[in-house]
Amino acid sequence: MTNELRESVPVLTFPRQTLVSLLVFAVAWEALSHLAPYLGIPPFAIPSFVRIARSVATITPIDIAVTLARVIAALFISFVLGLALAMAMYRSDSLDKYLHPMIRLLMAVPVVSWILFAVLWFPGVEFRICFVLVVVCGPVFLVDTLDAMRGVPRELRQMMQSFRPTTWQYFFKLMLPAIVPTIFTSWKVNISLAIRVVTIAELVGAVTGIGHQLSVAQELFSVADVFAWTLVLVALLFLLEAMVARVEARVLRWRT
Amino acid sequence: MSGPPPIEVRGLRKVFRQTTTGQSVVAIDRLDLAIAPHEVVAIVGQTGCGKSTFFDLMIGLEAPSEGTIHIGDKSPHGDFDFFRGKIATVFQQDRLLPWRSALDNARLPLELIGLPETKQRERATTWLNRLGLGNFTSAYPHELSGGMRQRVAIARAFAVEPDILLADEAFGHLDEVTAAELRNTFLELARECGSTAILITHQLEEAISVGDRIVVFGKSARLLADIHVKQWDKSSYTLLREAIQSTLQNNQADPRLAQRQ
View 1 (tube, chains in turn cyan, brown):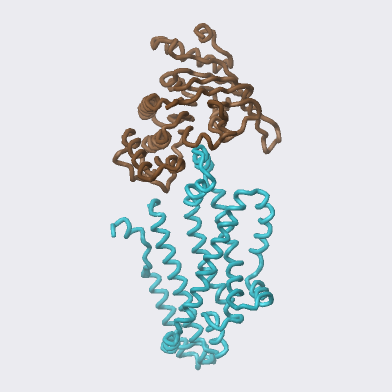
View 2 (cartoon, helix red, strand yellow):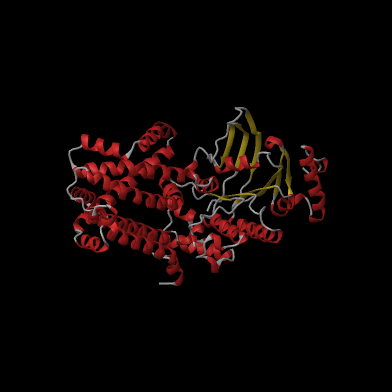
C-alpha cells in the first residue's frame, strides 16, 4: 500500500478527549449502578457493567445478520429507485412538477405513521419492514441526487454537450461521476437513518432482528439487554459508515 | 480524405426572451457569412455583441430563430449527431473534468465516438506529447497550472482531428507569454490537421496574429468588416489594429478597411 493510499483510508481513531469522556461516563454509570438501591432506584434500571457484559455474551449473531441484511437490501432498493427517479425528473420538467409535491409529502410523514400503514396494508413482515425503510430512505436519495445533478456546473454540461454524447454517455461520463461525492454523503446519512428506522419497524411484528430483541428485553424489564443491543446497533452503524468512508476514499482519491 | 466542408451562414437571427422582464433581445440580427475550408477566421467584437451566441449556434447547442447555418449541406443543430467527432471546441476556461486525469480528459471525445480504448490512449497520448504534457498524462487537473490545463483542453479538441475547430476566448485568461505560445501551437496544429478554425476573441493582437480573416462584429453581430489579413503586410499591422479599434468604437467600418476590401 502506498503512503498516499494509506493516508486516504479513514481509520477509526479515538482521540484522548473521546476516551476521557467515555471513561467518565462509564465510571459514573458503574458508580450509579452500585448506589441505585440507596437512591431508591430499582436495581434493574441501572445494571452494572458485569451484568451488561453478560448480556452482550448472550447476543445472537443471527439477529444482527437479519437486521443488517434488511438494512443493506432496503438501502440498495432505495438507492436504485431514488437514482432512477432523480434521472427521470432531471430530464423531464413536467414529471418533476408532478412528482415534487408528492416527494415532499412522503418526506413529511412521520416514521411511526409509515409503520402503522405498513402493518395495516401488508401481511408479510419482511415486506412491511422493507416498505418502511424504502419509503423513508428513498426520497432522501432522490432529493440529494436530483439536487446534485442540478448543481453540475453549466460550463461542464456545455463542454460535454459540445462533443455530442448520447444520452447514456452524457449520464455515465459526466452526470454520474459529478454526483458521486453527494451520493456518498447521502449513503452515510441514510445508513444512520435506516439503522434507527429498522429498529422501530422490527419492534412491530418481527420475530427476528435487533428491534425484536429490544422488544423482548423491554418485556423482560432487562435494561442490561437493552444496553447490550443498543451497543450492537451503534457498532453496526460505525462499521457501515466506516465501510462507506473507505469506498469513498478509494473512489474519490482524485480529490486528495 | 475529403477535408472540411465550407460553412455558410445566411440571414442568421437569434432572439432571446428575458425570463425576468419577458422582453425580447436580438443577439444576432441577420448575419451572412461564408467560411471556406481550412480558413482560420478570428471573430472580434465588443462584449455583448453576440460573439458567444454565434459560438453556441455554431456548436449546435442553440437553434437559430431565423436563417440557417450550413456546414456542407448539414445543420449543426438540426443534424446534431452527424457532427459527433467532426466539430471540436476549446472554451475560455479549460472545462476539464476534475475526476479525470489529463490523459482521460484528452481521450474523452474519442470515447464518445466509440474508438477502441487502446487507440484512444494512443492518440490522446500523442496529442498530449505534442503539447508538451508527456510527463503529466496521469496528473489530475488540480495538479496542473492554468496553461497546462488549457493545453489538455486543446489536446482534447485536436484528439478527434475535427473538421471544424471552435475556440471561444481560449487564450484570454492566460498570461501574455503563455497565451502567445499556445496561440502559435494552436494555429500550427490547426493547419497541420487541415481543420477550419473559428476563434472568437476580444483581443485584436490575437485576431491579427492568428486569423487568415478577421470578421468584426458590431451590435447584434452586425457584420462591420470582413478583413483578409493577407492583404495587409506586416508593416501595416499597427494601422490595421487602429482601423479595427476605430470600427469597434464607432460601430461602423473604418474607411481605411474599406479601401482594401
